[in-house]
Length: 627
Image (cartoon, rainbow, N blue to C red):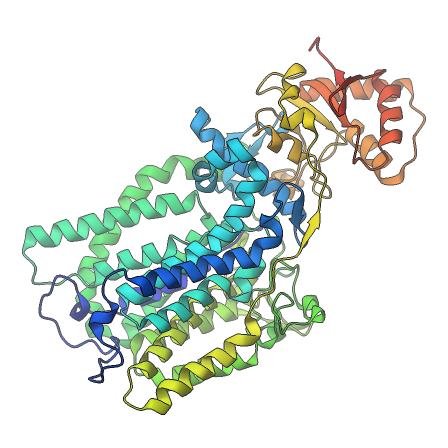
């Protein structure tokens, strides 16, 4: 749910790195020092790396199986289990997946009134992941949003790894083993595993390598191509880039933001390192980016206007950058979600979904050594500089060391208060280091595997493996959860509320306990519910808040659930309850008969407010407005 930034973007840096010498058009080009040197020895034949062979399929299958292994506890029973470390965000994401599937029913609204009735929510302000909802709609409509959620958790990681593997092995032409290592790290680094705890808008990075591919292709465009062919290549690639950007915005806007920021920074650093090569790439790259930007502006102008100035928009992020900043010690610590991690390290972060910096000392030493070994390659050097800058930004406005605020300002303070950027969480800038490290690792292993010396070919991959071993993730922990009542899963809700009407769960969902949102999710978001867990403009001055202030009846029911005490209901309470029902425009109110904390006390309270309810399946229903 937090506003996240696209870390994968970092990869973009690679985009400038290849020169025209690697261009598939075959035009004669100057030698590219970034391209791994071809060894004359038979152990790495180029032909062995061409074509989608068994080795490529094996790598892709391994990346997929890793995702299944990581999430198997959730996959075995998605409806009855939740991610133990972030069940609240999971409730929201499952609702968003159900709402996104409504695209196929003609619901194209960017402001949905199906949550927080009657005001609704601005979907783009809530990391809506429309694309995932659209893609997984068949699963959602047949098996339920919890199944779609479980598939997305595993699928995002696996697809991200596969996309990176294709980029590293095909576009950057690295040895398959090197590419597989880098891809696995991109998919299953501690930061990605941590974000997999319901932050699907952050882990959905499988389009980032496609963005990088487009930029690389533009940069590699030969200057001596016939004019028409040159224009067709630049315009076509630029248009494809623009289309991918449009899709990514509805898949994970924060990832798109971080990708663009990192790409711009990398290109600047790369141009300073190799001005001549950058000069040759400037014209096709700038032309293609102009085409892509034009397309993106035309398509995204309206959605972005709704996000930043439409109904229920927020002018800022709801989270404090001081709270969501990286602890310096976290960079050399191991994640509690890794096999070598310890639970005590969790105190260094704001929550278990933000272990973004936990790389450990061994990997940091290997990265430093790799940069020292390969520093003459502009891609490696530019990646290192870009990574250092992003790591510094991750430290936030004030640097924290081992849980103690030092009072020393961090580079992020220069960005604090800027539009859009101010809504970003500083700690997520550290996610950029994942593809940065992956590229450096892959290029290091590739360089070693192409060397004539057998000891180097064995030693370097072994060192990399030892550095990565402590980071191998544990399966994501899960907890049991009660299934949604049959009243909702079997469609009996239609007896008390029409599709699109308002049904009030008792107690109402809120940021501290959004579980009742799952009732609407079970009905594929076919009806609206009041309140809930979301980002809205309800703080002072219309600034961002988590959730909305509770109405009197909602406060009353939440208090009964929390304390188990039935208050004395007065005529004033009954009047306020009727006013709340009218404000929400509710057709009915529903209380579950089972799996409800202090359910007996809640029933007594509701009967005192509204009179006796009617039994229906496994719930009790109170109808209003003649429904």
